[in-house]
Image (tube, rainbow, N blue to C red; front, side, top):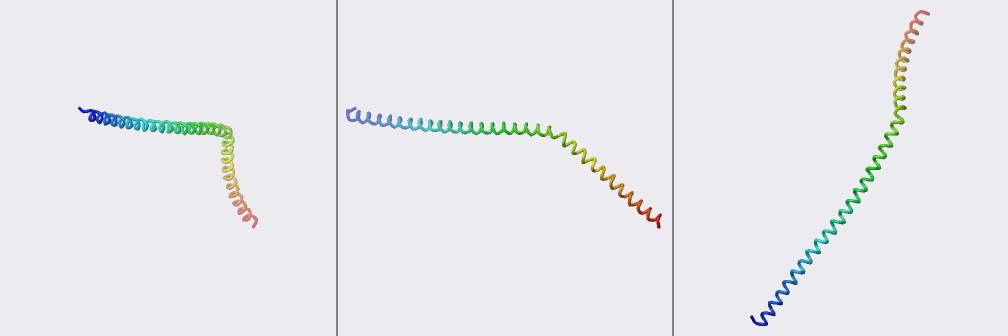
Length: 113
């Protein structure tokens, strides 16, 4: 092999190795970019999940508070229901008394005529 062919071969090998090095560097840079992107996405998702967990905790606290409030007013609700039932019964009695009084009025009119 002549020295010019040897120099040309060396130059070609060097070019191939440099191209291979550039390709490997580009592939590594791409992988690193993907890794950084995935890391950022993971942090963002973790932050969203923390927010959701806080919101869920707030809802649980609110639910506990509402359950306590309901326990406090349950007795009053039951009393209102009982009063409502008694009012309906009284309305029935009042209606019945009204009917009797009308009948009595008619009988009294007949008697006094």
